[in-house]
Structure formats: structure tokens, C-alpha cells
Amino acid sequence: MSDRSTTKIRNPKSPKKQAQSSMARKSSLLKQTLILSAFFILAIYALFNTFFNPTTSPSSFADHLSGDKFFGFSGKVIENDSKKVKIFMYDLPKKFTTGIIEQHAVARGSKDTSNVKYPGHQHMGEWYLFSDLNRPEEERVGSPVIKVDDPEEADLFYVPVFSSLSLIVNPIRPPGAEPGSVHQYSDEEIQVNLVEWLQKQEYWKRNNGRDHVIFAGDPNALYRVIDRVKNAVLLLSDFGRVRPEQGSLVKDVIVPYSHRINTYNGDIGAKDRNTLLFFMGNRYRKDGGKIRDLLFQMLEKEDDVIIKHGTQSRENRRAATRGMHTSKFCLNPAGDTPSACRLFDAIVSLCIPVIVSDSIELPFEDVIDYTKIAVFVGTAASLRPGYLVKMLRDVTTERILEYQKELREVRQYFEYGNSNGTVNEIWREVAQKLPLIRLMINRDKRLINRDMSVPDCSCLCTNQTGFITSL
Image 1: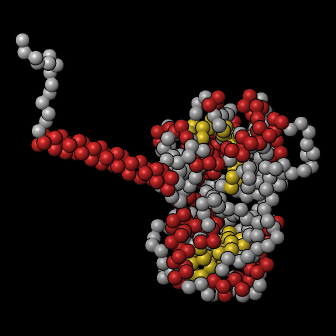
Image 2 (image 1 turned 30 degrees about the vertical axis):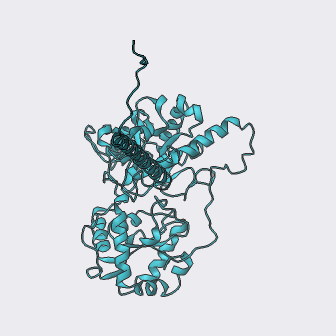
Image 3 (image 1 turned 180 degrees about the vertical axis):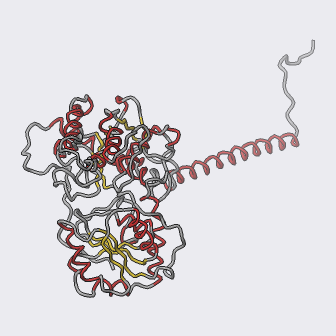
């Protein structure tokens, strides 16, 4: 029997095969190293890009309200409905809305009120907001707010009373008619009835009206009940008729008048604007508006200045349109209150506004720098003999063109009929009030006793200590 081992012994590899195996292992390791290096480089790039070039924005409410989210100068809008402020519009009794339109028509002799429309006037912003919320939601593309039908879902509540129109529903008594024979419409009664209706509503009582929005464009709108609705977000033309504890820039929104003359659609330029300064309006006003008569006395004899007395009428609007469209500057003195509708007529006319109103508040100042589109002159300075016209004559043509370019950029924000105009801007500013509203609601819940002689912290007193001419 052979003396061989039963264990099988493998033959060792040849040197050639060993070299091939070693090269294969090195190749595999090299590939793994390259792959890991590529992943490492990508990870470093992603980390750097996240910190220094973020592609996602924070989910905070403030970010949703930033200028590149809502409709503003950037022209960008929120399209994600979940990020929009939810607003519920009350279905008010007819007498507070379309009933006022009918009463206005009847007072002017209409026998058939079935097809009457809201009449055109400078405070018709209340009609445009009402119409906007009555449109189908798919037609409200770009709006910063979304209408909801369930009040439980709402962030804010809109009260669509036509408070400005109600002021001018003055019945006209036919010649020879006996006093009292014509039904007398009462705006004061409408105001009181509105507050009584609101105070019965569950959602008004829940937060004492703080999350409600009310349009009161005319300075006299809701004058009798303003103290009873002052917690709401008031949409006002100015603060001329409200006290500091009733209205403030913090709580409320300044809205523009509806312009009453045609928009200028021509090119910018000074060649065809031969008049230096233009004004057409009521010469005699009360309170701060007394400046008008003094300016008339100073300016009416200047050769390149047109300053005329005129009240609202179709003929006067046509004359005002021609005047504003052919003038370089348009005078905007205070009316009975600090603001007046002619400012917005001037803006859409590309006629550079010259604002003489020391206490004026202006719409949308969070996105508009008015010093780029208007000249501001203090009341005292404007009354110095020769000061105003000399200042305007010294403005160069190049500077006038700069003003006009800026006016053309912003005028859409003062056009209620523009789908991307005034209405969206008002809703944007209303939406920005929501954090403050929630703060005040929660604060009210914990406060027990307060000295009501001290102004509420939602008020803001504007600086009245000085005025600087902008040129």
C-alpha cells in the first residue's frame, strides 16, 4: 500500500496568476475609492448649497406675507390656497347692501329698481371689494385671500356694508310736495341697525369684532357708530375724522379713492405737457382744506398755472382729464380732511402730484416710496410768495421723466378695475394685520381691568413735529 496522504493539497498558483489577482483587487479598491469620493463631493456641495443658497423658504406666516409672495411690486403671488388668509363675507340683510343702491336710485326718481347698478363715485371701493368676494374663486387668481363659506374656517370676517353710498342717499322732494310726504332715508338709522345686527352675531361677540373688516372710505362713513366698531380693521381714506383711539396705522388700512378721470395711456414726456401746474376742484373747504383758497389767491395769476374752481360733474371731469393729461404737475392740497381724490386722478394721469397736506396718510406705503412719484411741500412753505412755482420751474426735464416712469410703474395699484390692482393690494394689507389681530385677541383674554383713558397699544400716533419738502 502506498504511503500517500489522504488530504488533498492545492497546487500553488503560478506567479502570473498571482499578479492578475493582485491587480484585480487594486482595481476594485480604486473603483470603491472613486465612488466614495464622488458621494463625498456631492454631500459637501449639497450642504454648502443648503446653507448659502436655500431653495426652500421658512413656513412662517411672515414669510407668506413677504413682498415676493403677495401681489406687490414684484408681481408675484401666492397660488397655494392653503397659505392664503381665509375670509368669510357676511350675508348681510339687503338693506345694508343692494338695498342702499335701490334707495339711491329711488331718491333720484327711478321707478324701476330691478336693474339698478352701484353709482360711480370716489368712494366706490366698497363695491369693488364686495364684487370681488362674490366672484367664483377660480376667477380670483392671484388674490392674497381666499373666500370661505364656513365661518368656522375663517381667519377674518368681512362686513360688506355700503357705508359711503349710504351717506349720499338724499331723497329729492318733488316740486310742490308737502314735507314728510316723501319717505326719508336715514343713514344714521342704517348705522345703528348695522351695529345692532353685528352685536347679535356669534363671531362678532367671540372676539369683540377684532377679526372683522369694515370698509368706511368716506371720512364721514359710520361716524355715529365708529366707537362701537373701532376694534375692527377699518378701511379708511385717512384719519381726518377719527380719533387716535379709534383708528391707527397699526390696526387699520389706508385705501385709495377711486379715480374719477380717465387713465392716461400715452407715452411719457414733457413736450405735450405745456401747463406747469394744474388744479381743478372745490376752492372752499373746511378745516385743513382752507389752504385751497390761499393757494388760489397766490397762483391764479401765474402764466403757466391753471387753477380753477369746479365741483363734481361730467363736464368738469372731462375738463379735469384734459388738464391733468397736459400738465407736468398737479396740485393736491388737503380737502376737508388730509386726503383728496385728485391725488389718485393725478397718478393715473402721469401728472406729478404736488402734495400740500401735512397730515396726509397714503395707501400701500409698505411697497411704494411716494418720494419717487410725488413732490411734498409743507403748508407753510407753499404759502411763501413765489416759492412753489419757482421750485417746480427748476425741475429738469430728465427729472420729470423719472417721475413719470415711476408713476407708470405704480398706477395699476390705484385702479380698482384692474384685476391685479387696488383690490388685491387692499387684501394684501388686510392679510398682514392677522398676526396683530391674533395678538390683541389673546391679550384681551388675559386682561381684567384697564385704565381706558390710556391709549390702547394697537394705536399709533404719527409724527407731527416736522415736515420736509421733498425737492
